[in-house]
Image (cartoon, rainbow, N blue to C red; front, side, top):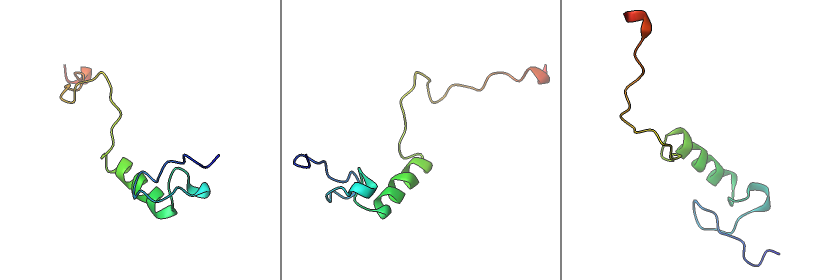
Amino acid sequence: MNGAAKPCPICGEPADVLFKPFCSKRCTQIDLHRWFGENYRIETGEAPDDPAPPNRDEE
């Protein structure tokens, strides 16, 4: 069943069962850091320049 295993998305090495889909803890940490650093984004219907809703307390 391991015939068509995908490589690690970070470094391209074969994936390890313990860290799948990554090859090591290091690559899992790199991926997590990229998410926290906002290098990855999930598309939404919102435009990035949408202004914040008006603050009703300021009226």
